[in-house]
Image 1 (cartoon, rainbow, N blue to C red):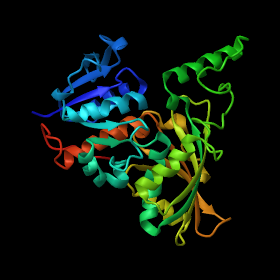
Image 2: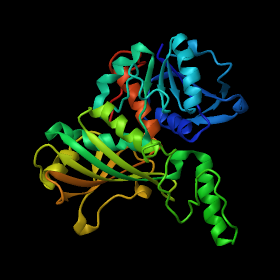
Image 3: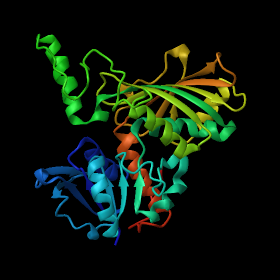
Length: 347
């Protein structure tokens, strides 16, 4: 028997993407189940050339699966992950519910794939925040080369990071501008059409948002406590694809050419960087792709040992679904899950 998988939250943006990527990467699953809330019973979702009917999470028997890919929000994860563990299945969770739990590994396979073996404590592995995932893929090779002391990051995050309703709000507001229908913010704090909003998640007592806090503490957990990071996270009127402007202070000198060489050869990264030819990547160009794209690598002349770059990735893929499937592949390749055929190769 090969691995049996349940995708929880199968009708959402990330859930559908999880099913797409499992099929694309030919993950050796013997059976895949679509699971969602009770109101989604009987709804159909696609898995390759198959159509799956959704089961209600309240009625689903998790003892019949080996692995659960969970993308149903923090409250559902807090309630269901321990129950799933008692049923004997491992959960890879996309929410923020378990990321900072010391007994739950927080994993980006290109950075700390070996950490998946910490699943045994709670039978849970956490997926990082979407903005963190692409950032640490870019930081890891530079950190390995000479060490990173400090990172300053400004994000330009698409509305899909806030779910389907947020995407609908951008669409409706944009259309409304052209038909003189005054847009009314519902999902976001302010109008998102033709605007940018310097707030993602709630404000904390120190003036930072929770999204900005997540980027700092998650990066430290994945790459090491010695890295200091500060972020400003901004929502922009883009449907899919997160972008980041990143300033890195290294522990030793490095030329921009050397940084490009290192990044070009690193797993999970595509370097597209030629200012003379106006070659760089925008969020529109990254949609549907697996890579974390790096462009505009250059020296930061304002600090010692400073490097700057532009980082773009499909947040529904690397920021969520793809990273979760890559974690499953790590479990497969390390013998935790039983393949039907030879283990797949992780990009």
